[in-house]
Length: 308
Image 1: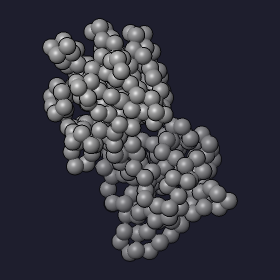
Image 2: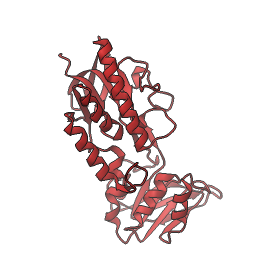
Image 3: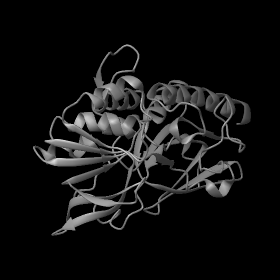
Image 4: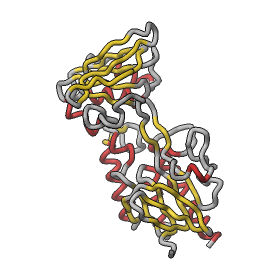
C-alpha cells in the first residue's frame, strides 16, 4: 500500500485543527480523521471567555472559525472513527470502524476525552430520552421544565448556568459539600435563584416513565436516605476519560489511559505524537490544546525531514 499522507491527525478539536493549520503550511500532506462535527468539546460549550483576543465567543463559532482556517490551508478532512493504529516498517496504518485503512509517515493523536457516565442502568439506552451530555445541544428542548445536572466542577456549574436560560429550575446534585469550580463561577451559581444545589447526594437510578426520564433517584451521602427529584432531563458532568483505546496496545498510555508525551509532544514511538486533552498534562484548556497542536505539527515537520 502506498503511503497516503505525511501526517494524519486523529481528532478535530482545537489541538487537531491548530495542527491542521500549521502542518500544511510546512508543506506536509495532511489529513484530519474525525467521526463527529469539527471542534470537539467546543461545539458543546455555550460561551468561552478565556480565548485570548476575544472577550466572549460562542464555542460553535470558534469551532467553525478553526475548521475554516484549517481547511483553507489545504488539510483534508476525512470522516472516520479510528479503531486501531499500528506501525509497520516505519509506516503507520490507521484502521477505521468502516474497514477503511489509511497510511501515513506520522500520526498525531488529538482525540480528546469522552464524558464519564453515571454507571446506572439506562446510561446507554436513555441518551436522547432525557439523558444528555450536552446542555448546549439539548437545553432548549426543556424550556420551562425541571432539569438536573450532576457534578461539582467547572463544567457542571457552567452548564447549570446555561440551562437557566431555558429550564424553570435546575437541580445541581453535588456529592460533596463544596464545589470544585472556580470561585467566580461558584458565586454565579449560588446567587442564581433558578439553581437548586443538592449537596452531599449521589445519583442511584433514573426514574423512567413511558420510555423517557421523569426523575432521578439520589441518596444522601450522610444518612443513606433516598429521594426522587422530579426532572425531565439529566446532564452528567462528572469528568472525562481519554479516547485512547486505539493506541493502548502500543504501550504509550499511563495508568489512567492518557497519552504520555514529552515537551515536544512525542510519544516513545518515533513518528507518533500527541496533542490536547488526550495527553497526560496539568491544564486542559482550549489554549493549551492549540499550543500542543502547533508544537506537534512543527515536530512532525522536523521528524519527516530528518527521517525520510
